[in-house]
Length: 450
Ligand code: C2O
Ligand code: CU
Image (cartoon, rainbow, N blue to C red; front, side):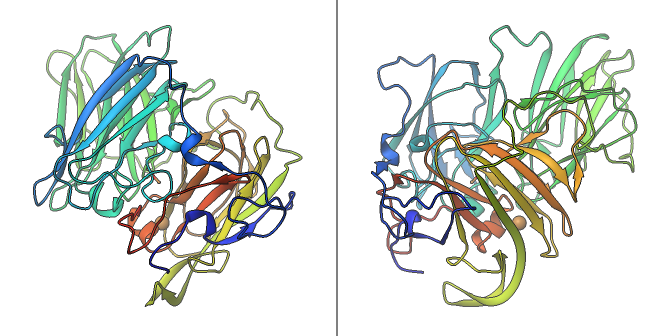
């Protein structure tokens, strides 16, 4: 890997059968297009913020904190609010950023060091501004040396409430395993929340770890009301089943508290919704809830049947060299970074992608700036609620057909959210034609997003 390079020049352009329009550096061939810098892709600069938060990032030699704590502060907004967050780096030596995981922010606000901004150095600050246009559960984390900074604490939750109000109680729960500890919920092994019998509670689970986990409910049935910030359509009552919460993913569960209380559990941690101070505990069910057939179908809002571009994201593993280091590296379509495909799209394209995994390990695949709807798994068509994801759990041996509309111009990472795997080369970008970035990655630049 060069000491300094542009994300726009990474990889081998893959136009997915669509028009081969070039972009800023012309490095990918095709017709050069007028180029727009990612720095121009911002929210309305004249609008005053509805929510304004300042957070101070620090490193104490072991943990990374925001405002002295990990997780950092919960950022709460209403749908449509303009959110402004100022990140001040007091003492994170490598610099830091904030990435808004699952939020479709303008590209300049995406927080990827070396792609959409420079890492924020000690003594510096960066202001993020975006409209929270979707109600749901999201999270934020550093995207500078993320395989270390996230694991060691530099993250927090974002909750966007619907304009009409939620109508139920809610509790946001970040699942995280700090080095040397067991799994926590918001940093502790158990949260006890006193509630009354009959209260409905929406539990917003977000998995901030590198590995997937499962959640289940003891003492009551539940509904999965949202995944990755998208409400599900017609979610039925679930009993005796566990649900996967993939790395980076969110699952919102809704429970109605019975007289004896109820407990939302993950391995090693739990949330007691305690009526009268008690809540039952139970073992994990052996049966998984399958989101492919859960809920009832509804219109997608676009037609994936005749896509403008069709991509393959085939994950494998091969011996080879990555940045000069010999290893057993992840591959995309058989190639090791930087020879992986760069997925090229134009604004407005309907895109279909087949993500398959024959690499021997599970990968939680995360696309920035967009949500993908699951069309099929292993060739079996989705038959339940539209299942929109930004973080997709792809087991070894599985393949998913997903679709999305390219409606948010920029340079967007598309990577495994096991951040160690991203570091090991399981990353590429979704690149819009006509977009360029002035930021640089590489050893000499100080920007190391993975
Ligand atoms: Cu949550 Cu590219 O990351
Ligand atoms: Cu992975």
